[in-house]
Image (cartoon, rainbow, N blue to C red; front, side, top):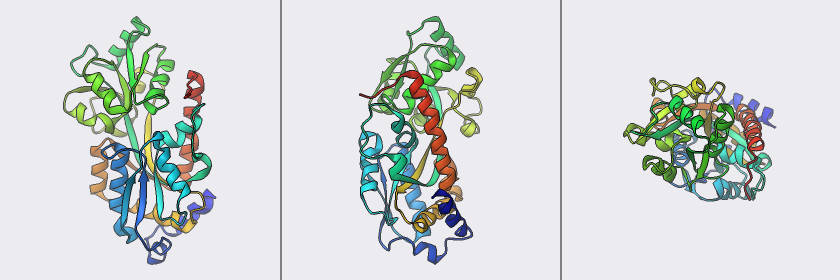
Length: 321
């Protein structure tokens, strides 16, 4: 399936010709996101919608259907039209972490019910502590954690989230023991770190970049090198914990049964949109790195990430009951 979709996308690569646009319904197109307006996931969906609309010669709107870690939105896409008029703004967590979590009820199976259309952006992660607190570097934090096993806390956006599992990976690879404190989202977790009620968090940079730039949080390590040019003085996590790299992504997925030509039209419009310098800057300003991947490459990334996060979940014995 993916190879046939990729071949169809390559035919359209030179330009999005009128016949390719004609493969989409002649009405308003929708991208359904599973998280609240103002967050990084919603931001990506709206930037993409605005950028691809003129290329597709259609109105493209974003709908927010929040709850259940994105699955309310995902189910709406799967149960809706399969003609290419509706896509799911698919984040890494919903597509690769949730399916591997024992005990997590899912109304749909993203491995079977959704197909990859295009990846849009790499989501850089960073390790943050309270600005002005006792830890000026990642090494400082690790030394304190080793000196007092279980005495320091790490915050997350909830059990089974990327922040939670990133903390589990860190503990295992660094040989430390931390107290996990789950919150209802990254925003309240960051607030408690700033207030000194939690010590540390590894999270999507987009969730904390304004607090870092405003001097309220200290960025002590980057999860990968994609945002190194924006924070040249900040070391990589792998410098303190060899082999530890953490990054996420945001892409577009469609319902199984979506016509290959419609997949190709969306993928090609996304590829062209991401070549725009203004869109690239908007993404980078929010801790994101523009990164187009077509259906086959995006599907392969999902498979790799499911395997990697599944191993973390199994090793840590994480369950959602």
